[in-house]
Amino acid sequence: SPVILSVDQCERLLQAAAKHRRGRLVPYVAVCLFGGLRPFEAARLTWDGVNLADGEIRLEASQCKTRRPRTVKIGKTLSAWLTRYKGKPFFPVNWRNDFDDVKRAAGFGNSEKDKRLTRWTGDVMRHTAISHYFRQCGSYGLTAEWAGNSEQIIKDHYQGKVSTEDTKKFYALLPKKGGRK
Image (tube, one colour):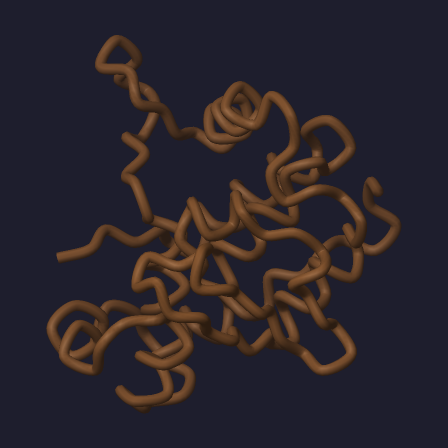
């Protein structure tokens, strides 16, 4: 069963990303957390693939695990984050070190040495995004299309992972007014 982040953990991660080096990793975190992109899809994304006016991200076949292009609908929360941090690269130079710093600042780590940190799980932001998207729309088909998965994967792994109340809180995680840019 996929591991997902709590709403509090999502908030800490977003805050840490916004504070780190003038928010340079916010676009990456936002498209993974609210757009459900896989880490390597986000790493291959450029602003040319983002259409804020039409509310969509266009992923080419070469960017996707399934080797099929897909269009990801940009919801209001993702739109707010991308608008606020527009132009910052999705995968900046020194990404690995920066992302490790952001995760640590949010209370996550991969080291067995530091028991104070919650272990970071690969694709956890994507799993969180899919769980909340499914709760919000309630459709296996729409969720599968949005996430680039099959309906069976959604049925087997993502239904019932979050509550309606948590999903409302999740989509209410907006960038702070006057924050860093």
